[in-house]
Length: 61
Image 1 (tube, rainbow, N blue to C red):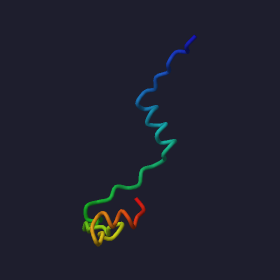
Image 2 (tube, one colour):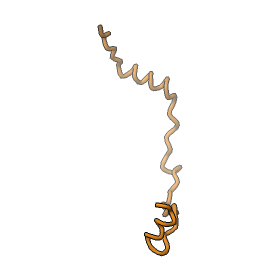
Image 3 (cartoon, rainbow, N blue to C red):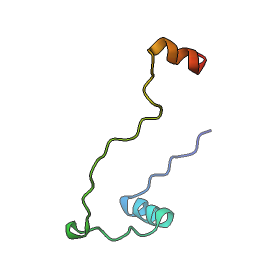
Image 4 (cartoon, rainbow, N blue to C red):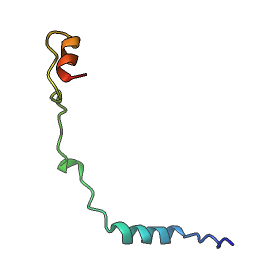
């Protein structure tokens, strides 16, 4: 037999979230934020020299 499904109220769910995750950190105000600048990431490997077929030969593929 299946047991009846227990449904929680919004307040009970809020309490369970608080117990599991605790207090949220204070909100960061706009004047406390720092600007970030996106930069190009370094490639994982250098560009192949001598053509793609030579690169495959060197890589063993």
